Length: 405
Image 1 (spheres, one colour):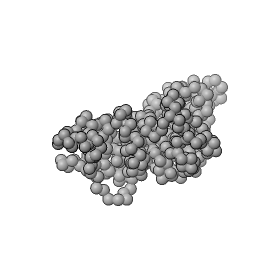
Image 2: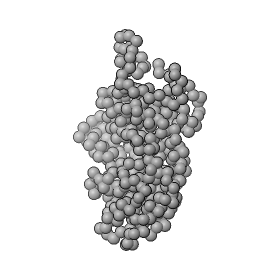
Image 3: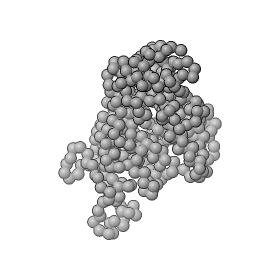
Image 4: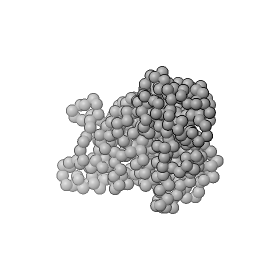
């Protein structure tokens, strides 16, 4: 039996973020050990046989079990308030594993049309294997309800969404899902458990791209699915064991250490994002700003209730430009920056800036982008830990040069 950490019950998530995992090895290390090994040695052939048959809990092969990966899984599960977690090689691998493990040909998914562009494409591709997806407006509960079928087995939402920060009512979606005999899965990438725990509102599974805020410094690719241990062990682990979308021990260790500072990073980055969002709302070259902390956000009250009063570190804004020149105007603002990193990644301590229509959502058709609200004048900013005044000056360099439409 793999031992528990031995922590007291009822600890705050901030404490679990630093302490949960596995017990130290006999060497007594204070920082979690990194187990860079592909396989594990057994005392005898009979023990090996029992372990490979899952009759005895032990580490056998790092494709489907490793102490470092398990430390990260236990820590993230504790922070999300779930009984189980399984690490994956990327956030997209987490979504892939979830569907492959829980669904079969003939099943149906209802998904927000505002999810990450690659998630949209992945769910569309599942149709080739007999799993059909209906895409609905993120915030339209009636549309979610209307899309339900007898074959619906999963509802999938991302809240806040990328990049417009649309917020869905997790509890209401959970009620719709459960009334129809389906699971609700929530992509918690933007908030992380530092701001939001979807299972508290009725979600069954929580999907993560650990590449983002869980790591927090843009160092590794990682993902995870949090949920009921019995379903993760019986449904997801067999797929992981066969398909091998495994999280590497090194990447798990980096995420594990990132979790220790997750709460303080998200609080600081959320505060900076709100300050920038307020400033952008006053700039004459900005047509609209999207950030859940702003009273102007359509789901402001819901976001504050679900996200612990924090808006998160991601905001988007639309530049003012004459018709047909929106893309050029957005590009000029992005290209004028000297501090922000022009990259589609987010969650870093370094502020990143990108043009979603040509990067993260570039593989979608223009009608799909329009349905998701991804216009050519839209810019996404994932705020890091730089001084807000410096970031304002960096954005003003391009915004001040735009001719007002």
